Image (cartoon, rainbow, N blue to C red; front, side, top):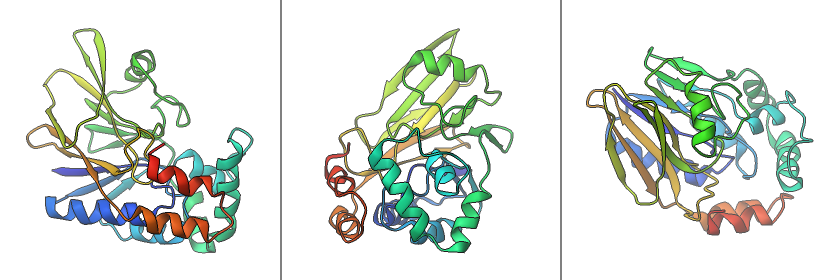
Length: 246
């Protein structure tokens, strides 16, 4: 089966549409979304509606989803992120706000072989940055593959022969074959808010039939996403960062 793995859309409709259009050419069987539909971007209702239209979708909530739904405090967010959350709360219609409150808490096991989470399998809000964090995460994973988001960086950690090695993905597309007996912790990067200085939308495809994983980047209409943000009361910095991938 072929899984489209994507995360951290953050209200960026143009980036989401570019990813889905690109992935349509690749015969996707299931969609795995790793959290943060909203926050930062100017199209939260449209993003939620687009994701809800996907068939065979598995998804978990992100920290921005929780905060917008009123399930978590914004005190831990920086001022710009907090402003984005407050704006999104007012912009969402009742149907979509109610939908956010019912999103599943991670981790979630898919087809007995895949785990998905937002931050880490032991804490949905924890950032996995480096091998030390990955070692802890592997202790909480029973499946050979775990997909996570939250950091907005495309990354791959491999646990093999009692060692854990991490790889930051910089060249795209990037493909690997998952080895039998090894375990994998994989971040596809962010659809709508990349932070690796590459402004292109990020996603990955996992083919469980041949154990292949491929990371992708795709261009989208950044100018339109920026225009929408600047036409609202959202902080202008949220528009500028899109062109920089930070």
